[in-house]
Length: 91
Image (spheres, rainbow, N blue to C red):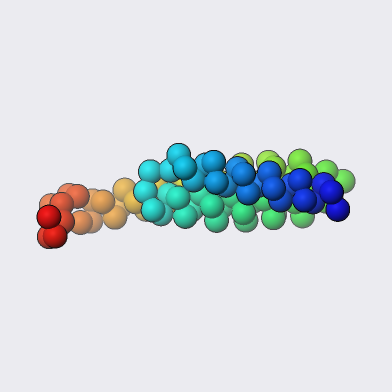
């Protein structure tokens, strides 16, 4: 039980620290969602081999990085799909 708590807290800290480095709203959301999903999947996979905490930590970091990359790509697409490449009608 203690290792599950440690794994959950570590994944939460990783998600919040990675989201602060993200550039746009989709990158931030992708980082958080990816880190939480990766930590859950890593915890489940790690539990099967007896290493729940390590699996959750690795899954959270990999999921957060992947979510950040996907969200940043979407932010970049949204930027270039705006009128006048990043401009806004509301300036």
